[in-house]
Length: 150
Image 1 (cartoon, one colour):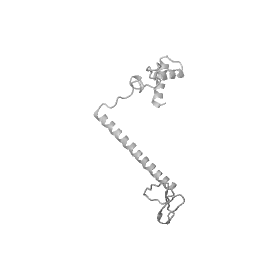
Image 2 (cartoon, helix red, strand yellow):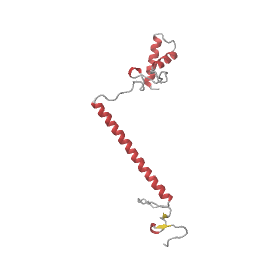
Image 3 (cartoon, one colour):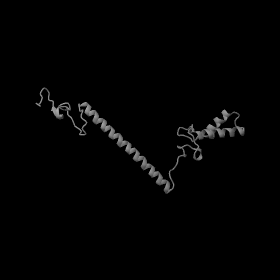
Image 4 (cartoon, helix red, strand yellow):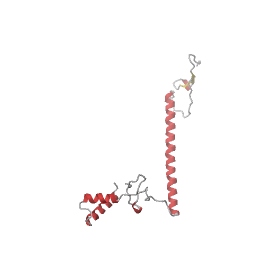
């Protein structure tokens, strides 16, 4: 629980003891905790159990949420924060995409016996194989049972 809420509940509990509504601190805290609830009627018909210390004591779902910036300066700050957040998200997405592509290339090289670290991406079919252990990294074509002379 947030410190401010706990401090408010404790202060209200002490007030309840002072005015005689509660005899013990435990009971006073229970009453104070209930007083900080939103208590709006939900669609189920039960009172809302969220904390409601904001506007009119309601929670964010029942009227305590901000309606957004009112001034041009506030709107400009909001738009700038939105753009900065998008740029961070897009940079992270591009970095992840690049890392995934490098990992895919490394797996392809390992799968097909490519030990050279050539930046050229080689598309290999089932019949061709790039063999770095042979002279000059020649391509050898494998046909079932027959081999091309080297």
